Image 1 (cartoon, rainbow, N blue to C red):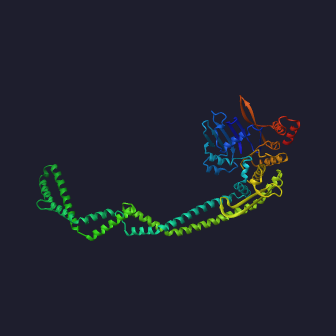
Image 2 (image 1 turned 180 degrees about the vertical axis):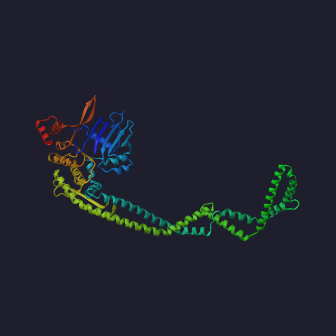
Image 3 (image 1 turned 45 degrees about the horizontal axis):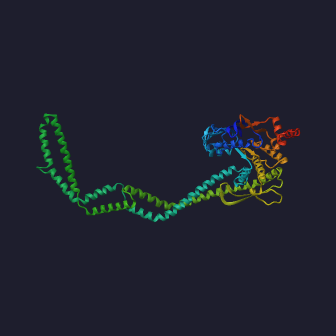
Length: 550
């Protein structure tokens, strides 16, 4: 419920601060006094876009702040979804800066307008003749029936299952598309895979193959050069090893005279050992070096195959070919398994659809059970509101389609006159009749669900006398379980209020300001008497006002 409202520098309001309580709050005032300004301020709290022209003083920011007690609304999950800190005393503040920028805060946390709008619909419901057109919307009509049917849990389960079913259907369709594409590519992928498998690829083999090819392809040249090296190293008179050995013997004779000579001797000895090792290795290489045309052809063919595969697959290394081979193997394997996957997904879809169907059936049956009671209560209330011949024809048809709220199509037809044909609400009911139907529906709903605070903006337009009295009585009964505001011009309704506020204009220092004042008992008598008889208050008008209040 709305417990406090503060408005600064908005339209004709300089500074307004007011507190509200439970029950039925009446707001009255002359035409043009500023009741619409009050509604405009509340609309900003609910997320309406700001307009710079709303600033009373264009050099100062406009601030509108509302305090709500939300302890009974079970909004913890909504606050979590909106990423807001929950507090039973929730404060919403809206600021319009002179620059034209607008800011919104919930419990001091900045929020977007979309978040504010989402939260606002759970806090206060403003109804005028324009808003009564909501009645003609299928979604709202379903909400009314579902509230009476008490199927909140079933609808939550249905929506969760519907989301799962749609996800499974999407996945199934993707698998079918994947299969269709895979069938087209299967033969080619299999051919490529076989080609790579037959190549018997080994990671790192390219360098080894290239070295083997170069060796076998130049075997005679290599033999000649190795023989030359062998001769240079081992010739008896001019060979390097013979020369090093002579040098070693000479250094050995002088090594004992100085550590310097000994050091050179040791280094030469190491060199001789290294040269001896090189000589032995060259001899081994010579022994293993034979011309092998068959092996050369095998290596040459393998290199040619690899180069062909490199060009075909646009890669440059065997490891990349192996990765392509593995990917192709997975594609071929996946294609062969697609039928199994599709069958599994079809089974999951079928099972989920069965659950969805059962939930939809349960929803359908509970809705059917609730419709007669709704129809009876509506017609009885409208009879009290001066529409004794109002009749509803509400029918529910189950379909094979899975909508967001079940499988039902709803026909919500209305006839205002005795013997009249049934038609859609927007065609069969006038604006005033829609207002009364809306009041009746809200009255019924208040008995079944916790509604947000509601503000009726001149919903009583076009009625008077006893009907106005009945409308006021309905709103008063509603206010026993929720907070109700009504802006009215009718004294019969104004007298039903728990609290009565008057909107009025006054001139202050050459400027006109709008103010809101809570009336005491005597002031209420005067206000209601004026509503009855005009500015000239007669004794009979005052007596009538007292009678209405009592």
